[in-house]
Image (cartoon, rainbow, N blue to C red):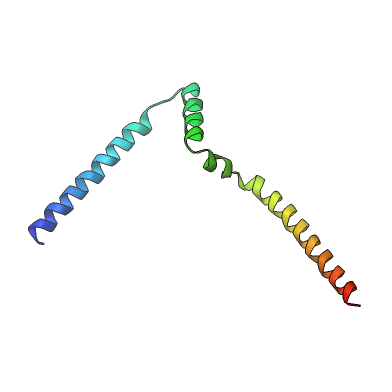
Length: 87
């Protein structure tokens, strides 16, 4: 392997290991419930659109089904009205 590529690979490996070590250190820190709530509020304040878009699958599925049925009924009503208008 060329020396410049070997040095580059070593730097990349060092960066990855450093990032992992920092991530593990961060994940081991215990937070109180108040800190967790504050962190969540801060995250939502920084990115309100994403927090509004995030919904659970349990909530999304029934809403999707209701919307699908409503749209289907609307389409069928339009089609039947169009057929009646042609007669």
